[in-house]
Length: 106
Length: 121
Image 1: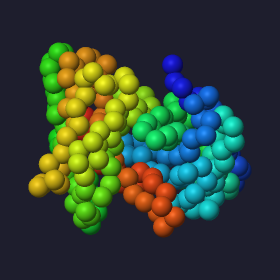
Image 2: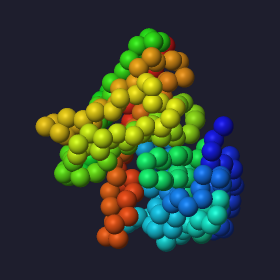
Image 3: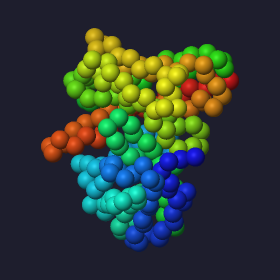
Image 4: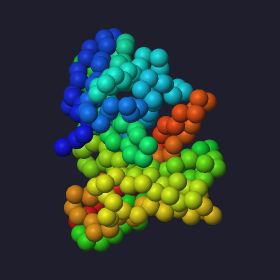
């Protein structure tokens, strides 16, 4: 079983907003990172330290983290956003991934 | 150009070992941790551990502690991950990935290798 729980799938229409949650008791006090992965490609970081965006990631991507739940929010969904999304919890030594969420753009 | 280049695909018998390499270029190798992450076919990402190239310190996920070794050779800016006692469920793409730090001192994983498929059969 996974210590970090994500919904297996989320579907959203173009232009709408997608929210992907990541929950688990191990999140308490830890920073959360989010990765996007498209088929056959290496993951790409889209959010780090709960809400920071790396250079080159559109402002449409944002994140929050409170208590035992973190959320990735993607506004103005585009077809190019269709991918798998993984949360990851960082503590001093370990980095734990969630099970992943397949985002489908209808 | 900053990049991580991994070794090619491997096929192993059950019970054997595999060693995957990750050659770094374009930056100071000893400045940032290297992580190893694997992904079984059709499955999610699984963090295995990290190595600090500056000194060789390591930390592993509990699941892999008994079977994984991570080393590095600073003279050729290459990190290695060796997994022993292979089983069929170790069949996966193995990625190396490098941390970076932003202007506020926050670390994140910024750069990934292309992945190495290890097949145990």
